[in-house]
Figure 1 (spheres, helix red, strand yellow):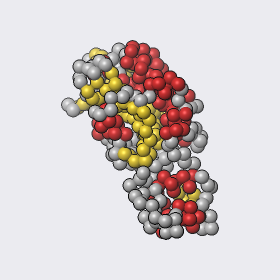
Figure 2: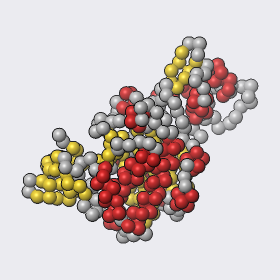
Figure 3: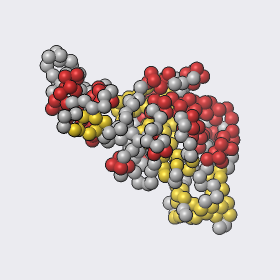
Figure 4: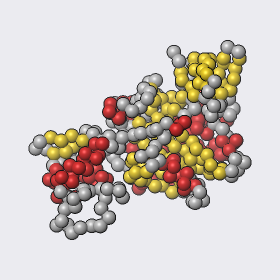
Length: 344
């Protein structure tokens, strides 16, 4: 339940002044082409002022809502709220067997943070977590990751490994491959992978991956895998992104797959890929990575604490490290020590 929802239910004849839970208002807006403020107030048992207040809150969260005299409120774009039952219904029997639990939240600090906390107390493998909103979502190197309400996918998955952390080299690359395959399952092609953790299309960022490790360095250990995807962003939402971006709506001519279908496809591919990775390591995915590697053969800039160097990317090695040919020879670059930006 949202923090804005009332904890006690008044009689139906007494409209609540604080307003409906945002999810309830969203469901009403999503179910009709347009709906008046008075009808919303009556349906939700609140005052019209409370409806207006909640609409403003939803707008502040990045949701496009228009108001027109004589017609009422309407969503600027179709919205399908995340639903655990709908996501679960899209999974195969094999995926269900690998899935420890699936939770969909209205708001969290971060889906990754939620699973990092759960890893310490819940012994199950395959815990999956999604959220409509993140108050402290983050990307690689502590960067903030923000998505407007209904505008993307914020998904995290907990995977436990019997061995040590050293065996997890290349894990973020495997996650990227699984994500590309899941998008293809949903009819979205032309997706590339930018080492070590970005999904890109048409030269712009579509999504990102954040892998955080815990447990014993020598084993057993666990990985919390976070995946964020832009589904439908507008210019206002994209203004806070510090690099060129693209969304699935653009790639799908304005009609992206439903977010529940996307979430199911991502979980299906991730659960399968992670089991295979635990058994066979990154080597089993090397050819698939090469098919989607957007840096191979391009000049790149390797940024380090002691300065920047330019070279030519030459794929990845058996551990998933980036191979870069510099003026003085080739070197394997690990994701933990550098950032890479493609250069013209």
